[in-house]
Image (tube, rainbow, N blue to C red; front, side, top):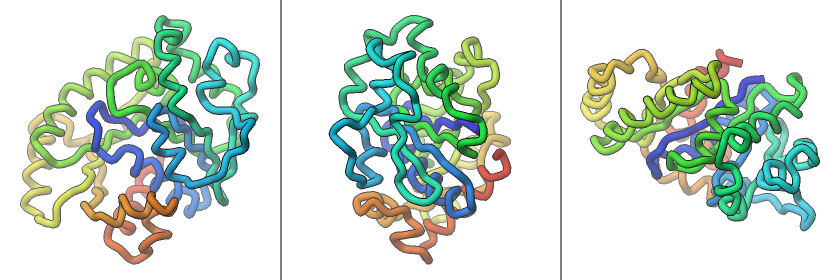
Length: 255
């Protein structure tokens, strides 16, 4: 079971869309995936478009003082579709920020995930907020790999140079953490544009971290989540769908 965080400290990088589509594509490849929404905005939870019972247990219940060590992670898992399960969240997650400060709080997600049998899933995908806050830290502490989606723009590349050292700092609490790769997301049709930013990343010394796959810019990728569908369900033959399939094949080699 590989625990993977999809993270970037800059909003708009497409991390939630990436997590959503990666979960679907890995499931299509026969893998069992658990998606964990660890962002108070709850975009991933809303994206799956499922009805939750009134007594649903959320990720914030598992890590709060009231539930930590008392509730089982299995009680929070919701089946979404064949091969995909979800642990949802609500805006209430944000209310726990002050409670989780300190070493004992930062490891709670990691400890909660130990309640999953190793054979239960092939991949656990965590979607934290698009900022370097306590929930991002907790996700990194709990993970083995981090995938960093980034757009090919000057601002995004600049933010990336600050985020990479931020990830490295978490190895003090989690020595097994690795940067699995940088995913160029929302790329333009122009090959010159992609080549320009690829060269910039190579110059920054992170060329070996770049996924061979990249995700082209298309409104379909955003629209599909509005209907609770992955890109492959919404428009199976679109170029973006093929991009996500190739990306999933790369991640598959880790599992």
